[in-house]
Length: 101
Ligand SMILES: [Zn+2]
Image (cartoon, rainbow, N blue to C red):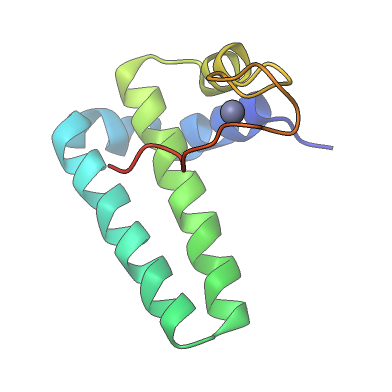
């Protein structure tokens, strides 16, 4: 099994030079583009496309974390450490939906 950290390290090995040259803003823009492509695949009910776009979103998220020097696994698991960060329950018992962007 590959962990989030191992996947982030793989992205670093593959794309470190390109990612660091591109920088945070452009890498963020690519991530947004991939999220938009994911939605297009969802709308088209294209299961294969959805899986590919989810993989791209994860890859660009890991690249952005690399550019910013953030350990994605540590960040994710420290915030989502087995329970909802708002109500501290598992499963979540919050009465309102997750915060909209
Ligand atoms: Zn909750």
